[in-house]
Amino acid sequence: MNSPFDLDGRVAIVTGAGSGIGRETTILLAELGVTVFATDINLATVEETVASTGGNSIAIRHDVTSEADWASVFATVSSQTNRLDILVNNAGIMMSAPFVDSPIEHLRRQQTINVESVYIGMRDAIPLMRASIETHGSSPSIINTCSIFGNVAGDDSAPYTATKGAVRMLTKAVAVELAPLGIRVNSVHPGATETNLAADWEPARDAEGNLIPWEVDQANWLSRIPMKRLGQVDDIAPAIAFLASDAAKYMTGSELMVDGGYTAI
Image 1: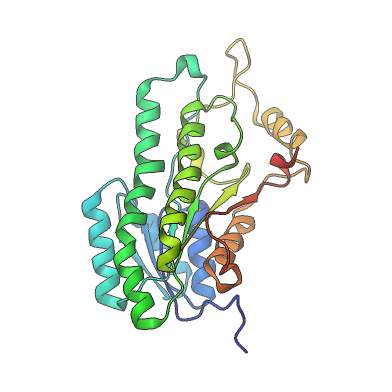
Image 2: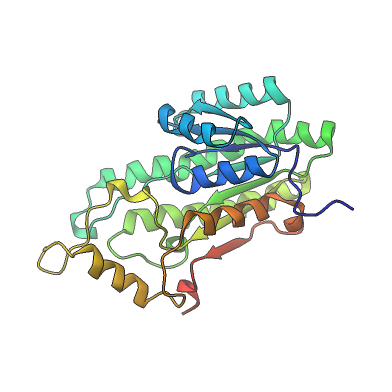
């Protein structure tokens, strides 16, 4: 009897695979027998990710905001495998600043990368996923990396919170439309996780504008997390693999919180 968690032989695209959650997800899926097309705007970092998988993945430079780049990625996957079972829309950025100090460019940039890329990826994956169903009996799954800030407000991150709220509801709307086609769409909502996602994130500041030491900021986070630790990328990747598998075959439009209990309070 095959395990419902078995992913061997499937084909995936993982965006933002050069670091953090995307890198860990690529490595895990490859270990589970998935052929992974790992994409990132930084080719060097995604090539490092692919090298870590032992050869069961392919690196592609990919600007997720570009429809032409998406078309090229899907063409590559189609020509090499003629199937797509898993799409992980993981690429994203987080820019943090008090709302009164946030230029409109903060919202526009995060909207383009965090929301529009997910929209394009899901829409343009449909033909290849439908072909996979017809020719391979596939059960395709789309997983969108969202955030706890898609559910609750985040400190000094109004634009980011807005974009993740959009991803959350976009996931549900598309899940309803694609369910009759046999394509599942779910979202994973990481809590505070030690990644480099916040490379553009300004350091935390107090009310007077003074920098808050990392140790103090971390203690503030931990005080609000029941499990009393920050998340690690290897906490998130298995949740994505679960949603990609047949173990989640009756889940669509769902949101999986992986946050140490943060949103349970």
